Amino acid sequence: MANSVRHLYVHVPFCARRCSYCDFSIAVRSSVPVASYVEAIALEIVRHDTQRWDLDTIYLGGGTPSRLGAGVADVVKIVRDRASVAGDAEITIEANPDDVTPEDAAAWSEAGVNRVSLGAQSFDPAVLEWMHRTHSVPQVPAAVETLRAAGITNISLDLIFALPDSLSRDWSADLDRTLELEPEHISLYGLTIEPHTPLGRWRARGQVVEAPEERYETEFMMAHERLGAAGFEHYEVSNFGRPGRRSRHNSSYWTGEPYAALGPSAHSFDGNVRSWNVSAYADWERRLRSAESVVAESESLSEENRLSERVYLGLRTTDGLRATDAEIAVARPWVDAGWAEILNRTIVLTATGFLRLDALAASLTLAGSR
Ligand code: SF4
Image (cartoon, rainbow, N blue to C red; front, side, top):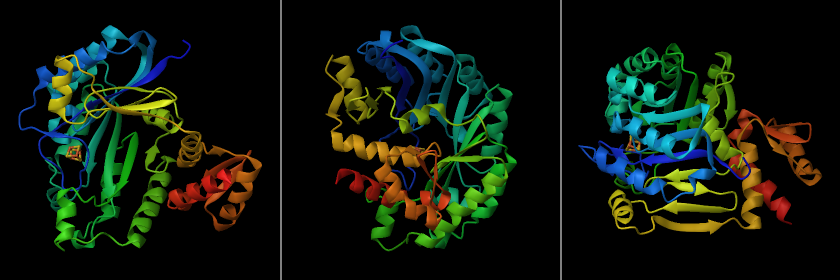
């Protein structure tokens, strides 16, 4: 279908409490207003030209989509009722281990959810407590088992690395525990301390100090080597997949494809213009019920934006950046330094190159703009 939209992101903002490092757009609720949220999604979707949606991926992110429980199935049904969804579509939800019950996992599977991104983060109880996570260590393997028993066999585990020295976190042991669970995909996040988070306040009071840069590098390279030896492809700077198990949804972001979006703070891209919704849940819901626009802002990509995105996104994955002669000339010294390879006129960063992604992308963009 010409000009079709093949990817949909749905933002589910609810969390039981805010994790110490989190600066995402969330709504902290001890009791989730599932029915109101689902109704609001139904009100938002009719504002879109869903005739053009020919979906290959649907991704419910958050927040914590699993907090909707069986309401996840209602959201997926609303989408299916309005849009064409491929028979083999990748339908992912993000889940916290403590939300995964046999009943909800069965409802998700029945609705067509076939991939779950599980927020494991660490297998050290003291670390989970420090992060203000709501789950316990044993709930991670239990959730994996429950999902598989429900027929959801494409499981990604999220892990956070580069934690403060004071936690004495054993990264190697956490990688071992992760591999024991035999996930299909693993996403890594290097901890950054944002000012408007509990962690930012702890740092301001001198109660916590960021991990030194060398440990960020050591842990990143340890993951690269250990997961690679276990059969994972380090296909994107923060993501590892077994062959054939790359995230199809996230890959659409990295290749610059258009995507639609629903939910508070959700961002969409039509190939030229990026738009994003108002972020506060109550505001988003009120606007939908009073027929006001929920779009907070939009911006057209300038030529300069396009140039830098092409470079930055291209270098993020092992598909690499199809390069001009001038770009190849800039990248030659990176090959000597072990940061990149040039294959068929395509610049592909190595793992040590991924560690320098921002600097390398900036120098390439600068050279291109001269
Ligand atoms: S569960 Fe995720 S979105 Fe919610 S507070 Fe924690 S890190 Fe943020």
